[in-house]
Length: 111
Length: 114
Image 1 (cartoon, each protein chain N blue to C red):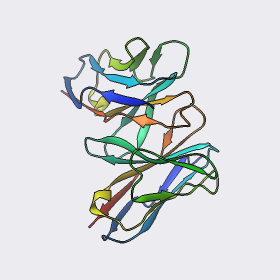
Image 2 (cartoon, one colour):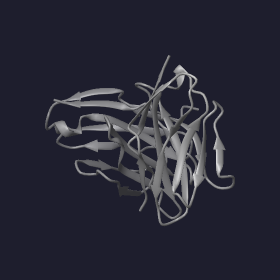
Image 3 (cartoon, one colour):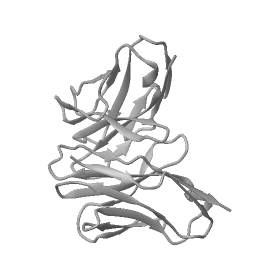
């Protein structure tokens, strides 16, 4: 059981470039999440999904987009990368009201 | 909507001393509460959870937390800490009918000194 898998683990982007952070879970969870973690700020919710075809904005959605075409995959798209998007990104999934399972994170630097 | 406040950003403590990490939440509906631990350069791991039933919940490594509805709190405690407990701890909340929204506090860094 792989759990939640995120790729890539590290990435350096230039200002204005685009990229997609991949997230896959093999636990058949209905809920999936994207968070960003900045020092001293905890985890901020970017987007979440309650099932395939359904997504909703979290606390800090500006500059990001998501899609959920399958139960397993929940990619996060950054368009026109900015230095403010330098962060560590975590994907998570859970079933119902149970605990969330997290991926190992993607460390993104925008220069 | 739910929110979480972790009252201490850093907690230094000596080995074998007791510790309490504080968490208060705000919600207008029934809540489900979680404590996660994050070791350096790793993802988050579940430490313990309150879903229903007994208000005192315990982890396998000696931590416990008590759900207090009147105080809207879910404080984390350990009677005797080890060096290996040094990590960042996050409190999280979701609520009944919240459409899956899972909100985290800003975290508390626990530093255990010899």
